[in-house]
Length: 241
Ligand code: ADP
Ligand code: AMP
Image 1 (cartoon, protein in one colour):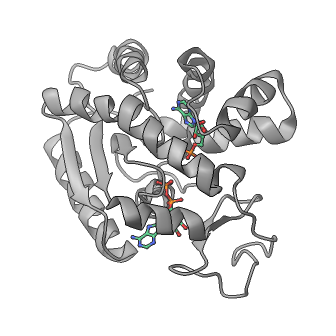
Image 2: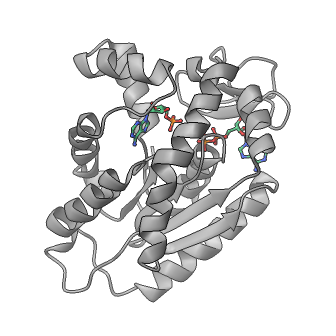
Image 3: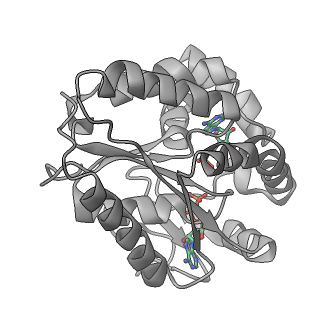
């Protein structure tokens, strides 16, 4: 759980293909700025584990490496963004993933977050760029903790004790959709359905691209630089609720 944010950061959108480091970097942003990470992948996996209707519908699609239909995501994201811990900002990790989702998000922010403010506090949109072969290597070695969702890599970021989460000692798991044949489909879904999201933000002059093919700490420093600059430029934005 994030500590209470000291200042208003506003929405942070992390874009990038599977394996780019969105989850890893989100945890760093949570620690520094005290705003929560909202990962639609994590939210969907919670529903899958809980066996809800949504979880059952999503699982079939996720196991194929395809995107869950847009309309299954909107209530999930809206309910989460309405929680009080999102008041000073939030990190969207894995959302929006289609141009329609990006349009929905803008409308939601206009309607529910900005309407009470004189000054709009627009999202800062950061795209993490990583070479295709490096993505394959990262996804092949990814392990995650099913309890706290912390992310490891057996080659690049191993846990202190082989196979166990550093935080809570839970046995680490390989995500079903990190299997080789599913990974290829997920990367292809990114190219066809998610790249237009970057184009959407680029056309509005809101996209900042970071070379994420570097050690974790270097990428983190670059992201903090972008967020600090953005927050300073919009220091007059008031908390949303
Ligand atoms: P995403 O959320 O974008 O799918 P993750 O944060 O889960 O990506 O990272 C994918 C894998 O790559 C994980 O195993 C993670 O430990 C590893 N990883 C993330 N960032 C880096 C980095 N900068 N250098 C090396 N490995 C990384
Ligand atoms: P992630 O944990 O972000 O890699 O997401 C895992 C899977 O969840 C994806 O491959 C999709 O099937 C599904 N998913 C997560 N976020 C979205 C989204 N915004 N739109 C559609 N499907 C999503």
